[in-house]
Length: 210
Image (cartoon, rainbow, N blue to C red; front, side):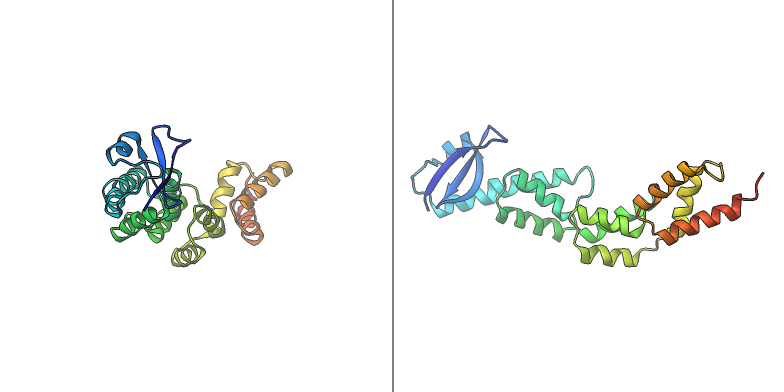
């Protein structure tokens, strides 16, 4: 194995990218490069490369991932993106993800369950809109559809909740206000039928008030 290039990183000036046999291997600070006697054009023992990957790079990547998910739960795609931004190799990233999934630190199904439950509790949206948000976070459509199918979402009640909240006790709203509310509910992902039913219900419950 030969060190074919050592180049400074743009994002982190304290680290250098190490290329072995023409391929990116890992990034190290200069003190580690000097310690392991890595130099462009020189041979490097396979054992040395293995030691660096296992005892320096992998542990650093694992710590980075654990710190990243320490503040809040993340999707597998978000963790992968974070580690990629830190210039860890694909092999190292996959190894870290296997560890995280094995011990339940990265679980897209559980992430979906908690995300949907929290969104419905605080700021309800349609199943379609929630699914779109989860897909944007990198969760596969298969997992999203499975968890949505398991979740009870009362879109009629949620749409009525928002309509009632937006009207603030004033019914019927002016035409301009009515359109703004309608557009708001559409952005929440509710269907034309669901929105229409919410307006009909409001009319039944508040239309007769003086």
